[in-house]
Image (tube, rainbow, N blue to C red; front, side, top):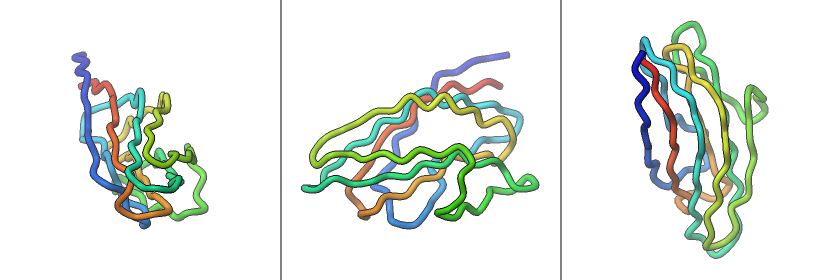
Length: 115
């Protein structure tokens, strides 16, 4: 088994739910931390899902789905980090996110990939 630390930067989130990180085949990814940066003049709420694959395909997530979910508020002009400790173990398990205000929050996912 090889363990590789990885960092994924994501651009400004939209108000629709979108996949930010999708697990590749024959790999397990352990999400360690997610850092968010808000350039808006007001707080922005971000919702994050750790969604399992749906019969091998990327799952469609709705706002009411629970799975493993976190909701955070990033204060105006600030950053916040969370310790996720989530595992993506199947092909197309994914991390999905949305913000309540578009194009104001970006961030970084730090994870370890086991192949």
